[in-house]
Amino acid sequence: MDFDRRQVTCPQGQVSAGWHGPYPTSSPSAAPLIVARFTKNQCRPCPARTRCTTTADSPRTVGFPPREPRDLQLRVRAEQQTPDWKTRYAVRSGVESTINEFTHGHAMRRCRYRGQPKAHLQHVLTAIAVNIGRLSSRSATEEHSSPRPPTAFLDQNEIPRS
Image 1 (cartoon, rainbow, N blue to C red):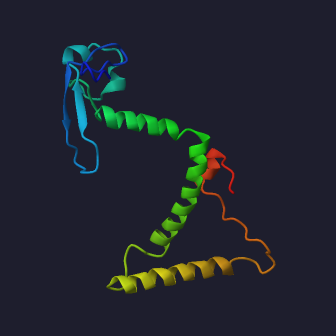
Image 2 (cartoon, one colour):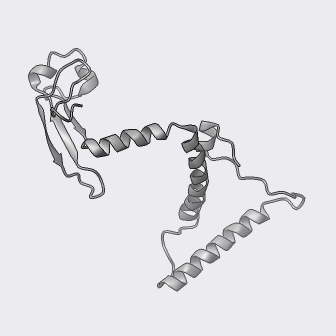
Image 3 (tube, rainbow, N blue to C red):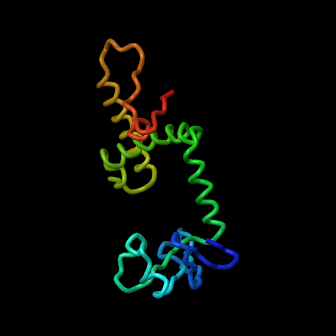
């Protein structure tokens, strides 16, 4: 992608006819997209056409965010591959599993009561019930608390638990 010339070059060396946008997306929180279009004369004779598009007659179009969001996206994706980021994310992964348990296992998206004080009381009582359930599942001879089984994220990335 050449943002200065407003052109995209495909892997086969063809240069787009130009691009349009940025266009707003359907989601208000998503970044707008730039759309680059290639011509039929560029795409029809291409030997790699089946890897680019599945349409029989239409040329390839490519959608991507503007320069600043794209640079940020690339930088964040590169950072996510570092061991430091994976170690920090392991903590979040454990917290998210607890939140998932409350959301799906104890229906915390729906409140039985109206008003914030009563809703808060429901959340506190549910948390107490979950803690009692966790404590009752431990054996009486255990001196130290054993950690919960690692999440799938920890298993896949071989991250040690603290």
